[in-house]
Image (cartoon, rainbow, N blue to C red; front, side, top):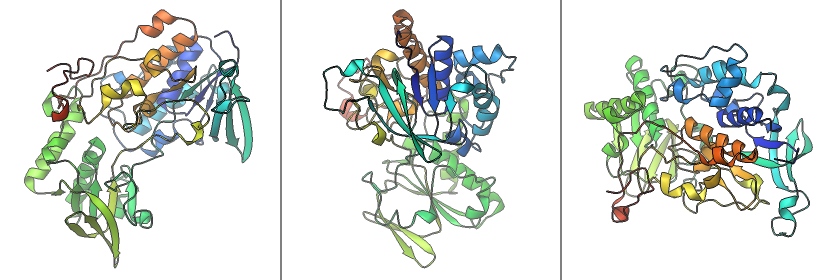
Length: 428
């Protein structure tokens, strides 16, 4: 990039820091804006959770190069880190490198991004104008000019509600004190909240499965703990994944262990169950579905995934898939209505381009509401973008991505005649 204005990286998680490392290697100036008190603020919130991807897939190539140059010792490639370990052994030392640290601003919440002097409707001369990032720091509004934007804010802060229609179920907001969005620390800080209680887990992905398993562990020492598992899938078997065929053994094991608990009757399964409303009855909750209710619940754990927040991008010209809210060119690769594969065709700057030149949505946010994002995917995204911004088009187009298979690939019946060669499932 000829323009010496920095690239603005929005967010401070693994993908944002990988972007910073890739830009540093390319000698492109950047500023990273993280709303938390430190980088990796969201990761620290799920620090108690063990990842199913080993270190091999969790460290960006440029970040590794910069860290090793300063005497860093890489963790064992095959080990599975927790979120806390990811922060302590990787994100924190990376953020403290002398080549990165001066360009990072924490406690800086971005509230708007636009082209300087241009609203969304004005076209003439638009691409020549710099971006202007408006952010809050110490209750003061600040403005930063940038040559390009990488939005790596993820989806962690915008959890999906439990209502079947995608909006909050009736009274869900009123009863939020009895609902935990995400995976609580059931072996530590949150164990007392759920021990001996009746808990309902809502969701069908790996987070929900992990939560059910953690609750069962709690039940072993607190036998009065009761577990309800609420899913919208037609059958419980659809939630178990690839088992022994999963390239990530820890991910496959989750499904196999959950399957065993269901067979043993240790979990009360409700599927398909569509939540329309929540009710307070005495000190407990009733979960109301279309045709039935689950009564006497003390706590609800919403392991329902998350969605992107586009509110601060209102004056930029960007596109998102109308159903998944992902970058449009990724939709066919990751749409869970089409397939359930974890393998995604390599993609980079070309697929991530937006109508607004040099604006990119990367990382988990680029996947919208799809639940299959892995860090390695985001690392290759930002590597490709950094290469493009540096004028290295060949490297930008040479995208490579190796991810283990999930061991399951179920094309929807509605799509089986389409022979989708570009999906991870490939033609039938």
